[in-house]
Image 1 (tube, rainbow, N blue to C red):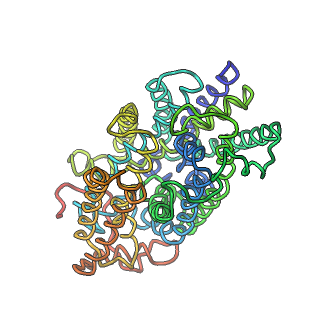
Image 2 (spheres, rainbow, N blue to C red):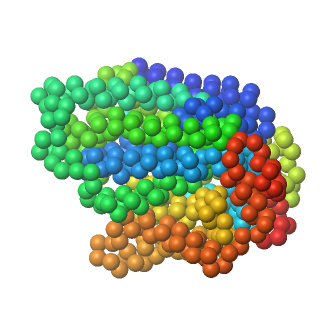
Amino acid sequence: MNSLDWAVLIGYFGVMIAIGVWSHKRVDDVSDFFTAGGKMPWWLSGISHHMSGYSAVMFTGYAGIAYTYGVTSFITWSFPIALGIAIGSRLFAPRINRLRSRLHVASPLEYLKNRYNLSTQQALAWSGMLLKIVDVGAKWAAIATLLSVFTGVTLNQGILITGAITAVYCTIGGLWADALTELGQFVIQLLAGLSMFVAVVLKLNDKGIGFLGAWDEPALHGHGKPLVGPYGTVFLLAFLFIKLFEYNGGMLNQAQRYMATGSARQAERSARLSAILWLVWPVVLFFPMWMSPLLVHAQKPDGSDSYALMTEQLLPHGLLGLVIVGFFSHTMAMCSSDANAIAAVFTRDVAPVLSQRARAWGRRSGLVAARVTTVVFLGLSMAVATQVNSPAFKDIITVVIKWVAGLMGPIAIPMMLGLLRTFRRSGPTAALTSWAAGLLAFWLVNYPISWNVDGGVPLQYQVSVPLAVSLVLYIVIGWIKPEDTPERLAIIERLNSDGDGDGASSGAVAVPAQAGAGDDV
């Protein structure tokens, strides 16, 4: 990097902070901070939903998969995400929007106290927060890894720089700041991605390699196969099922985008836009990664530095800075949205149970608590990021694929399926049992069983077994021990009745804004 690249990077950071300051004017209470007051346009929500699903892991971990295996990086990652969101646009998006518009909640988990009971809500809230700390920690480590390639700063310095900038704008402006910065980040990534695409095509032409003929090169032998290595059919199906839940609200931050729109119909349109973007745009981003074995020799065994090395070699200064900004934009988009989601869960679901004082928070004190919680979450995730490459967590892609994908299912199953009429018989017993058994299955498959299997348990089973266990138990226990009380049925009907009104005709009971410690569990 030279002074021009640094100017682009510093200018980007300045714009992000400015957007946060401007967004501060639109935040008057926790509803504005967490759900934009339900006033976000569907197209902005859709772009924000799309951007909040990326991070620099794509340019490190998935770049390594593309370098090693080729197009399976798209087939087993962004394609199932696009398909999952498309399915969820009808199945989940409208119902999640009604959580805000009809039940008047600010956290995606806030309704669980009445849908199940307080114990279920707290179990999902605590496990979801802990998982997100690990998840976001991996994202910080990924962007710091890229930053070290270009600037030479240490991993910890890179984590501190990116985390501090993100903390400023997302703490000041809440979800509005997240969405508006993600819009700007989308434009930046559009320019950066196209620049890299063109640079790679030109470089291939200089080598006498055609756009399509590249796949016949020996270095790309087998890279055109959709399913190779550990990323086979079972992995694809498991990943599709996981992403159906994760990217439609199971990881909380995407749920907020649906809640932020003005109506269920707008939430549906938001999801469809995000699905289209996930189907089309990653192809442009992945193409340079697929071609990387023809242009660079990765220094790391997993190839995770291949994209950064290629960028450094192919792009002139200025454009190099723009692509580096693109790396930052993805990671900061995801991490800031996660921070906002976890702050919502803590202040709305957890704190009122832990503290009587929290149950009495007013408009101003609740907003202050939300901002403090955001900063604390970012700090904890940054601390975890310094340990991502430790023996406990291993490499970045292991954390993201195995830990996050494997543990997300047991948390998301009760939350997401609890929205649907089909699963109305499943109550707190089904929810808690499926959650606990899924977490236990993750531990068994990834550690004791894997230790005793030659070569370890294949990745597709590491991530799919916990979700499968949770899903089966949630359904079976619901039929064996139905707990569909009139109060729970009323909530489900309110979320499932058509239209964008308040759903009062369904006869649903109102859901309290916050959970109290003394509620019956």
